[in-house]
Amino acid sequence: YYDYYDYYYYYYHHKVVIILAPYSLTVYSVLKHLDPCLIHLSSTEPISNVTLRANQTELMEFNSSAVATCSISSGSSLSFLWMNGSSEVTASNRVQFTDRNSTLTIVNVTRYDQGPFRCCVSNPVSNGTSNPLNFTINGPDNMALTVNKQNITSFLIGSNLTMLCSVQSNPPAQLRWAFRGERVNTTGPLLELFNVSESQSGAYSCLAFNNHTNMNSNITAYIMIASEFVGIGT
Ligand SMILES: *[C@@H]1O[C@H](CO)[C@@H](O)[C@H](O)[C@H]1NC(C)=O
Ligand SMILES: *[C@@H]1O[C@H](CO)[C@@H](O)[C@H](O)[C@H]1NC(C)=O
Ligand SMILES: *[C@@H]1O[C@H](CO)[C@@H](O)[C@H](O)[C@H]1NC(C)=O
Ligand SMILES: *[C@@H]1O[C@H](CO)[C@@H](O)[C@H](O)[C@H]1NC(C)=O
Ligand SMILES: *[C@@H]1O[C@H](CO)[C@@H](O)[C@H](O)[C@H]1NC(C)=O
Ligand SMILES: *[C@@H]1O[C@H](CO)[C@@H](O)[C@H](O)[C@H]1NC(C)=O
Ligand SMILES: *[C@@H]1O[C@H](CO)[C@@H](O)[C@H](O)[C@H]1NC(C)=O
Ligand SMILES: *[C@@H]1O[C@H](CO)[C@@H](O)[C@H](O)[C@H]1NC(C)=O
Ligand SMILES: *[C@@H]1O[C@H](CO)[C@@H](O)[C@H](O)[C@H]1NC(C)=O
Ligand SMILES: *[C@@H]1O[C@H](CO)[C@@H](O)[C@H](O)[C@H]1NC(C)=O
Ligand SMILES: *[C@@H]1O[C@H](CO)[C@@H](O)[C@H](O)[C@H]1NC(C)=O
Ligand SMILES: *[C@@H]1O[C@H](CO)[C@@H](O)[C@H](O)[C@H]1NC(C)=O
Image (cartoon, rainbow, N blue to C red; front, side, top):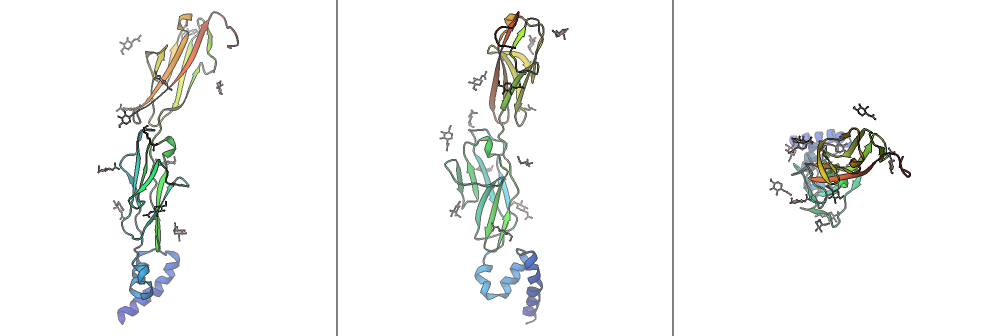
């Protein structure tokens, strides 16, 4: 009887706590010992420590699968809900849920599959949300090429040209250059040409490579060098 009373004391004591921390383990164990009406409920363990993990987070666009596994330290009768940012992830031909929805697989990932992903786990007595998980899928993207900080492509003989290549990439892309399809020695975002002649007219390409995603991208500018501006090229 002493024990019973003691539990009751805890029960009432923790009833206050119930309002403040409805999912504490203490409350759960007290309910389990005290209230026979809650036996079916108390057979549902509260959820703790929701953890989201992935084997690999550096992925190749269109060529990798993202696999994330949601695990918990304790809890039963679970249901899983997946979020990508603030949107719920729904199953499709690219998106699958397995292991009772505790594993998320996205095949042929795109740059829109970078997350942050979270899994939200709930059962009748509690719920929990995992840490966020990001995938890195940035290939080289959104390339741009300017010459002398301008958009123009026609220049006078004897000009100096500074070509600047910009690209979005994570990790940073390695940049190389080509002239008329032939690689030139220059690497990095700048290609400088001094005192140009007509023979240097042609296609200049900046080639970007992301060594983590294995993705390539390129952009080409057609440069004309003439003794005087012709047509509308100014
Ligand atoms: C939470 O779960 C992770 C993965 O299962 C484990 O490594 C970690 O020790 C757990 N933390 C606690 C506080 O239980
Ligand atoms: C994750 O890694 C473990 C151990 O390296 C491996 O057994 C498992 O198959 C991997 N899972 C996926 C989905 O790649
Ligand atoms: C796609 O992945 C496969 C296997 O990992 C690899 O052999 C292939 O080169 C990749 N394709 C591209 C375009 O990177
Ligand atoms: C994933 O990409 C491969 C190779 O491009 C293709 O054969 C396959 O149908 C794609 N799967 C889906 C679900 O889009
Ligand atoms: C997995 O989630 C879907 C809804 O996304 C639901 O219809 C299905 O019952 C769930 N499966 C399990 C085993 O919980
Ligand atoms: C999780 O618990 C909070 C706090 O009671 C509640 O507001 C929320 O709706 C619950 N979420 C789910 C998915 O059950
Ligand atoms: C995950 O991505 C979000 C949004 O892109 C970013 O705010 C956050 O810092 C990233 N988290 C990590 C651990 O990289
Ligand atoms: C360069 O030209 C393109 C289209 O011709 C235009 O969209 C872009 O805004 C221009 N950029 C600058 C810096 O003028
Ligand atoms: C081109 O650059 C060279 C060396 O920096 C400089 O001497 C020359 O004046 C420049 N020519 C023009 C047209 O700006
Ligand atoms: C190109 O690079 C190679 C090796 O780095 C070097 O030997 C050669 O002189 C360079 N050529 C030019 C034109 O800069
Ligand atoms: C990949 O590229 C990064 C940045 O360009 C560089 O620091 C790193 O050494 C490269 N890694 C390999 C394996 O080439
Ligand atoms: C440039 O990109 C196009 C596709 O956008 C590709 O067909 C071409 O082979 C690339 N060129 C180089 C030199 O990588």
